[in-house]
Amino acid sequence: MTRFTQGLEAELPQLRRHARALTRDPGLGEDLLQESALRALEKRRLFRRGTNMGAWLRTIMRNLHVSEMRRRARQATPTDPDELISRVVQPPRQDRGVEIRALQSALGELSDVNRRMLLRVGLDGESYESVARDAGLPVGTVKSRISRARGQLRRHMDGVQPSRQGR
Image (tube, rainbow, N blue to C red; front, side, top):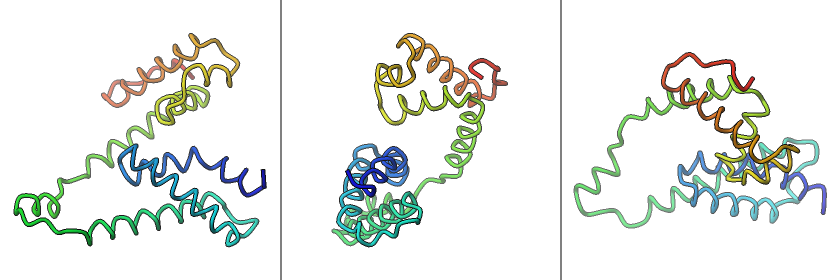
């Protein structure tokens, strides 16, 4: 395995999260991730050693995403007025930003170990068994820690003062 492919492989979990954030859809996010990885492999001769591979890969991903959005916008324009209005008018999204910042704050309250476990299972879709094996812990312990971390996140998001459990 070349140094480039090792670097690409190491960036895949972060790229997967970035793709899901861009597309707001897990399936489309996986498609964007695969297309981005393929493009990076095709264009690897353009990558300069010593530069930030993650930033380079995210730029490829963003450009692919923007191109896809433009392609979709050029496709057939709806003739139904209700459908046209639903495409043009979007509900306010300010609440999403507030929720995301609250979630980031809540994640910051978790211990590093519990946060990593929660993200691997909840966001990356890894199995409890895989996380337990990597951490050298029993599966029940991992499940318990993730359950406590989820509870702590839920309390924080509901405005309840977070406890110090799981730190």
